Length: 544
Image (tube, rainbow, N blue to C red):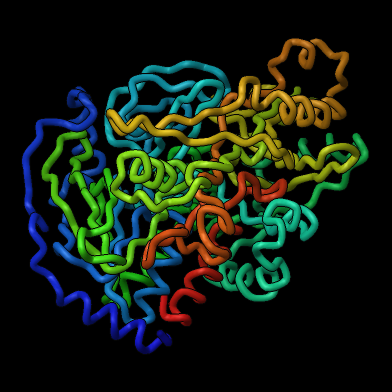
């Protein structure tokens, strides 16, 4: 099929409804056995928007996109621009922004708005805190040996990341993707296309020299003293809003270390302000918060059409409705965990029996390590969240360190400098599913992080001296979590070279699950977005 026939064909298929069970609804008491938070009345007052009645998608939609993060948003926009009606299904809420309201929880005093139905959380600072169960923005999944952080909100990871947008070195990209994806094509066409939408740029000099980034300047001084040259980082931030914070024209957010749980004033240029907004503006894309996708299946007797079982959730966890939707094209973009879980479960339970042996394989942590070292400067600032600079060390296994704030601590500098280490590591895990109950687990090698933890600590130690008590204490590095889960449905293995799932028509992987466990010592968001731009263009132009 050519592009014109592809678009027309999808539109025609939208009229072919009438399948048994489509749209049938049932009532259930509450999701995941969580009771309503005692703070729910407070949340209703602080953020009434997320308690508004939720819209429902049609029983049948030409294209369903599962998730609303980087890959999902790119996919939804380009499908809508090509003339295809799209439903974007997101389990989390759609959070607003306001310059003078506490929309999100703050990292230093977290509450239920910060986390997806949890009662405790241990962050990179290793401090365990109690939180009340609620449908907050960050979902933390604990597996043996590693915690995985992922988003649960409209906008996905763009809401809870630090906004870093870095293109990997070609040699690292080629090592990771093994020739399946052409780096030059990505560099010349698709990375620039994403940059045009997300507009990343380095911290402007006036902001970098403010009190909020005292720690960033101290970080740069330390790495220079150790013989490195810090390189500016491009970040997807609205620097005018950050200036408003510094001038008192907005409540402080980005300038006092708010990032992992969202920025209340919209300082972070998340996907709600670009790709998703543009998709909705076409009139062909609908975004549906509170819609958790539980299972996927090919429609019996209708190859290439899919049934999607959906649970509609209130922010409290109450189940409002359960139903089955159908679509002609199904795009999985629920993040590495979400997409992998759906595919592994479908394979194990027999709803998609033709999936190949690579489903669930090739999962990696992107070599993430949280690092700290003593602050040697005398000045004290307010822990601005945007990352200012990075270094790359290739004396051994390649590792990058990015300047970072110290999440979850006082908004003031506390005598420590934070870094995020990203090691080019080949440790991989695999998702497996028990068909008896549909539970999906991650098989992560014992001490799977040991190698890249040691490498990141080695580079960090050049700044503080490995013989110092702080380094010897072990408090300088933590690889017990990742904020950059990748893989599980790897491109060129579980899918073809453009994300088409092997064994099925009209089924696609469009997110970090397609990335082979690493993006080559950089944060994944730019590469995930560019890969989605590349893949959806080819899918549309080739008629599927």
